Length: 361
Image 1 (cartoon, helix red, strand yellow):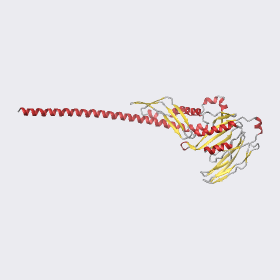
Image 2 (tube, helix red, strand yellow):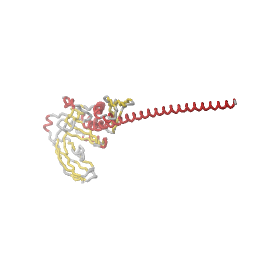
Image 3 (cartoon, one colour):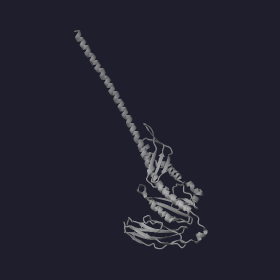
Image 4 (cartoon, helix red, strand yellow):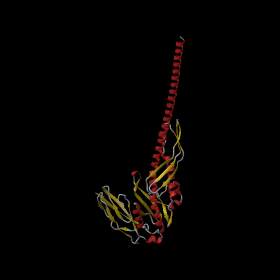
């Protein structure tokens, strides 16, 4: 009898132990579920925050590229400079720059003295352009509509001009505030494949040549630079004192747009006696031409200058290019009628121009 009671007591004890173990296991499962569920929510929130920050980064990166590409074209058209409206009120503006109807060009040589700005100054100009225009590009309306608060401070940029590329590094303090917390936009950068460093090297060599011998045309020297760097150098005598130079780089087309062109000017005062005795050159053999699409066209213009000055040629139609020495050498790719005005200028500022029609069959 006692043994039976003992056996029943043992069974009850075992049941109690199993119940306790079951409760403990249930509690552990509950704690684990809560922990992992909470961890998953935290990870989901972190993932959502990361996505929001990534969207802001992509948006700012697109803005950076939108202002950088046209900015680089403008940079080239203005000889490595950007101008503020206040500068045009200063007398020095007209002394240091050539103002034309199309553009403003800094003088790289004035009266035989080299005035080409150093590379570090051009990099500062480009960086300042980014700092000024990047906040004008960003419109945070798309983000604020989602309940995201954006707080921004002025960006700080650095520009690095290398031989075959331009890199812009930007520190743009953009605070991204959501219900889950705050995030700060990191540093951004953009590299553009542009031979700007190479083109500035060409401009440097041209300026050195002109500064040493201001009265010389340097046609043969510039032709050598064309071959060495695979560019086209053009010379336009603007008036009796100023000459504009361009470096045309067909190898560089930003976003498949127009080739990159870099301009600058040179100022060289000519004496009154020289000016009075000078006459404009005359083009001798320009006529209308019929060309074949895909077939190379070559022809050399001749000009007569009474004073024996060197004569430089320039075309107003990029589809009908001419070398400064008067040689046409190109392959037409588009059929149609092409009107072109050819200007022949001497090295003392006088010029004449004639019109011709090119028919491409």
